[in-house]
Image: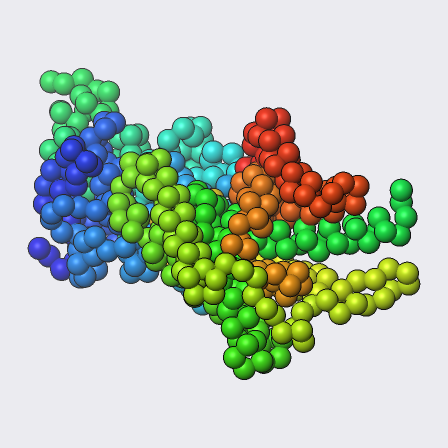
Length: 241
Length: 304
């Protein structure tokens, strides 16, 4: 219940038709922290991310962001409140140019702030500047992921949600993405990261949750979890005992 | 065969094609954003015409005021149509419903229902016959250029269409709402994540598309001297054909195909009897569906 938390999720339930996907999940992201959620495929990680961003509705429980209850708000109000997401599958606007993708990311900013923020992202991702007038669909997977992150950062979010940013990318690009996460935190954004690549995620995060069957089953600091026998066995490919 | 009469027919075809293009854009915009055909679009065209005519008969304002009134009526009708026939089916926000064919087809029928109701109400009030239009407002004053003669309505059609097509391009490329419309059309899920207000964007799409349709209806009504409750049906079909030929969600494709359609009709009627013109549209539709199932310009799926 500490007020230092930027995001407070309490006993969240989400149903999809007959199926219950999230079963009373609770999770916290402190201001300035990097928190990761681990878990195998199909345990509800993406559903959690979509529920936080207002793409899915919850049936009960609460989501509090920056001291405000944002449970079941429409997604555009959640983004305006300072909570952006680089979603699973990137969801970029493939038939629009890089420039337009970035501009849409900062759709709520004043023209001047938009130009400033765009310059900042183009400085960070040189590749986007060199492809500025090209259709986003022509970018490679790694470049699309960078565009997706840049687009999410355009609205100057307090909290950035990242859903599987390393999925399907070459190892070199994966390293870049994880370096980027640390850099984003240093710029004052908090990060909630969902990852399959548990080893890399635990390296950048301060705190970690393990999800199974729509709720949290293990939680602790990243160092604690890296040493946890169950986590090692299930997610880090290590040996138990 | 390339005599002066033929050139004249081509110009006629071009002006009709531009009108089809304005109507087709409304279809295409809405299809792009919602992935559904709006069957009431022809009635918006009719409403634009009647709103203008009512303004003319009650207080006889200058023509540009009549156009503004049709524009306002179109915007209002588009807003009401979305509210009545489309919004009720968007209550379900989960992925399954968003992708559901049943919900999409439901709006197909609800828009058809609204279209029939609106047309019937108009017939109840005005009767199904052609309305009489005050002579001063008919856009049929002849203008002679060399040995060719045009009607002033044709120049108005050219001018207004080019202004509106240009304005639409500017709107879609440069403004916030235009970018939002294209983003929702390209990737509705992505649009939600970046904080676009999807509901507002959908309403804006209906308002913009309907404005174009209503103005097209007014000008054609005054140019052809034919304003009647069922007037939206034929141009609606033609615009639908242009949209399908253009690849369903490509505005550029729809405009080009609408022009081709208008010219082909004009050429046909210069060789055959008047009635054969309409056949061309259906012929094009059948040929497109058989040989180019994704449309002539639909290969790349460039949307809106």
